[in-house]
Image (cartoon, rainbow over all chains, first blue to last red; front, side):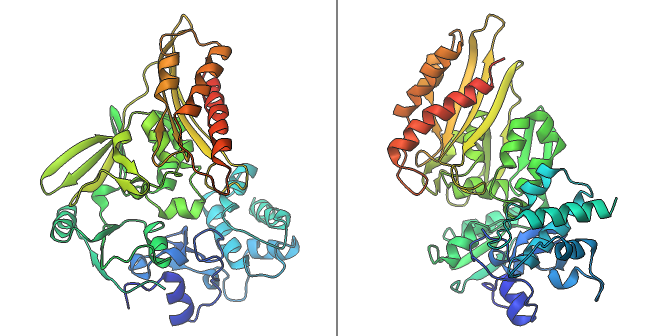
Length: 138
Length: 283
């Protein structure tokens, strides 16, 4: 693998895992968020080589087969998406948040999720979905 | 597209220093959030990167009177660290205001400083706290006060063959308080229009026993507000005096006009936010 290969390109072009999206390409929008050792990172700014030997989780690995997680179901019931391009990044980010902090405070949710931009929903549906998923696990 | 380059992984600090010495043109890769972006944009075309990301000896936070933060500690680790929070809550919250959680999880404390972007958050806070950068090379170790680390935009005093190993943050003096504030008129994850790191100690008589103020985003490097400091030191700190002293910062900063405001506006805001930072520190 060439040293200049980005993790996002490795996932999408070499492995065909196109659930990870490329939005801004400069680390701002969050569409390319994946988990490396359970921590969210910007895969468009990470060399694939930097992820060698580490555990990578993409949107494709969040659901258990066809069984959606409580968070994914909440995105549907709360209207947490419209066009869907930011959704994989939103779900991956929020999954990491809820794994670290099962019942995050409102400020913690907003701070954690502010790195995932959405141009459709106005964010309220996304925040409702994260809150609903946290409550569902109570 | 990133131009091809050679990636060499350092297995130990000693090996990293040897690699650096043998190829002074090589760039050091830590978290990569800034370096990879510069390479993607074609602004930097290194022929070789030395990946130090796996060096456990440069990672982690410890206390030995001073707080010592390994250069490869991520911002997220520093922000959440109980040691950092106990030692200096303002520093922990400053790390927590860097960009977004993804960048904080990937970008390292040392990488941020070595990048020397004048709009970054930790530099002015660390200057105000009197922190020290520990540099290591084949020739040995040297310590550089944080304000001398920054030379110009994207330029530091880290020499050829040297690696930033850790930063040392001394404890606040008894009774001293610290804060970091930033002005974000556009969005929460934007660079600041101006930011202020400040430390203030007021004695029992209401006089300023010590003060240190440094600003970000309003000059090519963090700007130490020495005129503000000398106008306050030894003086009784009333709100009026604070305001008068804070406004002196307008002559110390050297902002450029950009989407975050004209130079004149940033100069004005530097005064306003310096006053706010200092006022928040009054007992």
